[in-house]
Image (cartoon, rainbow, N blue to C red):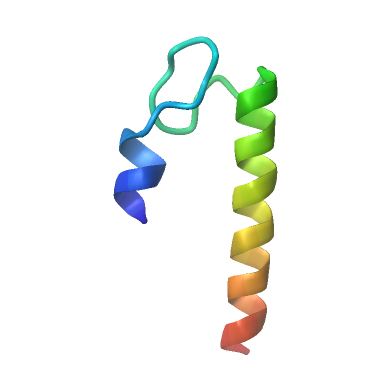
Length: 45
């Protein structure tokens, strides 16, 4: 999981990892990650 978060590229501006946070790809990636983490946290409770 950390490899995917730190080493992959989805950012339209070419910033590896978390990206720029501004472009549509970064916004989509963040939304998906936030959803995943919330669901994972709920499953652990």
